[in-house]
Every structure is written in structure tokens, then in C-alpha cells.
Length: 548
Image 1 (tube, rainbow, N blue to C red):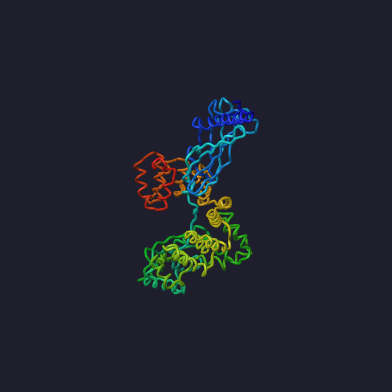
Image 2 (image 1 turned 90 degrees about the vertical axis):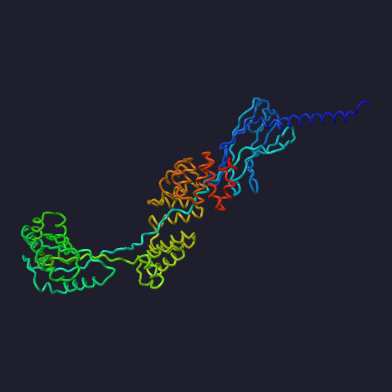
């Protein structure tokens, strides 16, 4: 029986489709002959992005001349998938504008890009392929694995920032002096009785008596210093000053009997040009600027005296008002005042805080262990004294607490919004808010070490790892270790890890894993696993892939 023409055509079409399907299927079945390489082999997150170069090698006779192959890169991760931009290849008889693969095969390189999404720290990069052949579409039955990923070690860096408190200015020991002086007549070294009974000497004696009953003050010694006024021959004045040293020492013994003056020493100055300059500078004497200019121009005492005497209009005033004050001997008792101890400051904060001056308040705040107590004392300093130092240190305390809004509010109230410290903390606030470019701009204005350290942190988050390692070198910070890990300087990274906490051991575990040191890895992980957050991270971290 003869077949109808329709049946013959139907069989022909079916047979042609079957042939087409078989040919397309051959490409799909031979997928294992395709070589795929990924650089990096393990995906890495850099500055919030995953970028890789994928090289695909098609063997000879693989690609059908009239086929088109579409490959879509996809990242599969816990919680979802991210689909990248497809790549399309064509056989040599296709005239579209895709990359051509001839019968002889080809190696084609593509760039893949994804934005990081939490969960991608444990993921796979795969390719989903389709063949288009003679009007039909044929899907590869399974995803083609390209790479594992993704390394997020840079995210171990913190953006807390480097900053410091301003020095409180508190002195634990304060040097003080009790002082008196006796005056001499011109060209004389005799001590007049009236000088020993002067109010200046009486006050000095009373001060020494009070020191005997003051537990906070200790006499460290006394110095007797004798002078001559710079008028007349220099040799005569030097001899006069030396004689006054001797008579002053005898007078001192008389007025300080039974008083504690510590070890006593004496010296002679000779002509007191320094005192002369100070008295003239603080006076309203006529032509004082000219006199001061002469002192600066000439160092020879004789020339100085001659030039000043030549100013006849003012010399008589100098003889009356200035020179007599320089014919003297001084008694200077050096005293050390022991300021409040840390314990005393803490007690005063609780019971009598109003007696504390600003340096004492700032020191009490610095000593406080509890951050809220520290903040409360700084607030008291701000309320009482209102200085930029107190406002700045209050802001820094809020930074330590992690209250960035309160910190900014404190810094905004500073009168002087400039300088290293202010610019640096503004950069820290911007960095904590993820505004890296703004933060970098602030840090560029900072010339102290904190600016450099913080710029290094910015470099980490921007993927400039070599720059970060250079800037953070020697900083002793957590981020210095991270920078060395990111540049694979494992020995340097190990040297910078100080301590044995879970975070320190997490970094030690990374180093051990990269070196293949199983024992060191296990030892580090025992401590890491004590921290729930780090233990969970470790189960997903590709740094430890070969040990899972």
C-alpha cells in the first residue's frame, strides 16, 4: 500500500527534527569536554562585590556550526540565588554579533560580576546553559559548576576607628614655691634689719610654718640667689653679688630657725640683665621698646650699659624705678604638692564633686571603668566648665559606647570645629555610617597617626589591600592583622596577633588553614567555638573549606 504524500512529509519533518535534536543533544552530552577555569579559584568578596574571570575552552568539533550557546552565570547561596549577565556564543555559520566558536574550538574569557548579599559566604558559581539550534531550544539538564565561594575575610576588619581622648592636664604632683626677697642699697651687701622684718619675710616664715602641718605638701629644698643691678663696672657688680650671696645666707639662717627648709644651696648671678629686661617689659617707662631693642642687639654688658646711659631722657627713670628692684637676694623654697589619688578622686566624685577643677574632673572620668559613669563625669565637666576639651572627651566616650548620634551631638557643640582631633572623629563617624568617601576626606586633613590608621581601614573596605598593609604597619591594631591576611603575609599577620581570645584565634585559624597546619587549626578552633557568632561564621567560611 502506498503512503500518502502527507504521511511522507510528516515523517520527513519528524526525522529532520530528530536529527536536529540528536545533534544538539551531542553538544549537551559532551559538556564534560568543556574546560572551565576561574580566577580566583575561590570567589572573593572585595569592597562588597564578587568579581571573577572565567575562561571557557571548547574542544575541536564540539560546537555545531549553526548552533548558539547561551550560558548564564548564577551564584547559588543559602537563601537564594543571584543571576548574572548571560554570555552567548555562536557557531561559525551564525552571523549574529556573538563570540564565535569554530570547528577547531576556542578559549573565550568572560568577566562575571555580582554584588555581595549576606549568605554568599557559602556559595557556588555555576553556569546554566541552553543550546539554540535550528529554531529549537535545548537546556542542559544540570548546572555546570565553575567555582566555590566566597571569601569574606576582609569583613573581619572593624570600622570602629582609631581616636583618642585629649590629655586632661591633671598633675599628680604639682611643683610650688614659697618665696621672699631682701633688698640691698646701691653698692652695698649689708642686710638691713628692716628687711628681715618686712612683710615679705614674715609671709615667707608663715608659709614655711604652714608646710609643717600640710600632709599634701613636701619641702624639697631651698635656693638662695643673689643679684646686682646692671649699672656700674661689671667686675664690681659681680663681686657685690657674691658678697650679697654670703650675707643673704646668714640672714636666711636667722629667719628660718626651727623651720623646715630642706637642703639649702646658694648661688650668685651677678648683673641681673634678665630681671632688668622683665621689669622694663612690664613697665610703662618711656622708650621701653628702644631699651628692649638695645638688649636684643648687644650681648656685651658694657655695651648695653653704655647705650642705655646714652638715652639720658629715660635713664633717670631707670635709676629710680627699675634698678633698685634688682639689688636683691631671693629665698626660694621648692615644694611638691601631691594631688588627689585615683581613689580620692572617685570619692570626691561621689560625695563632693563640686570641689574638683576641670583637670581633676577629666582625670576622674578617665579613671572610671564603667562607660556610663565616665560619660556622667564628662557631662558634669561640660556643664561646669563648657570647654571644647570636655565636649570632645564626652563625644569620644560616646564613641566608645557605640552611641554615634550622641557622640556627634557632643562634637557639634564644640566652639572650634577644626584640627586633627575634630577632623578625625568626624571621619570616624562617617566611616561607621558606611560613608567611606566622606570619611576619607576627613582623614585626609588629619596629620596625626590616627588619620593614617583610619585611612588604612578605608583602604581595606575599598579593596586596596596593599595600601592598607602599608598604612597600618606597626599600628598594633586588629585591622593591621587583617591587612596582612588580605595580602597573604602570614608570618607578619601572626606576629601582630596579641592575646588568646576567640577573635585572635579566628585569625590564627585562618593562618593555620592557609599553611595546612591541622594541629594549629584545631587548637585555634577550640577557642573560636566558645564564641557562638564566630563558631557559626567558621562553618561557612571558605578559608576552612578543606578542613570541613
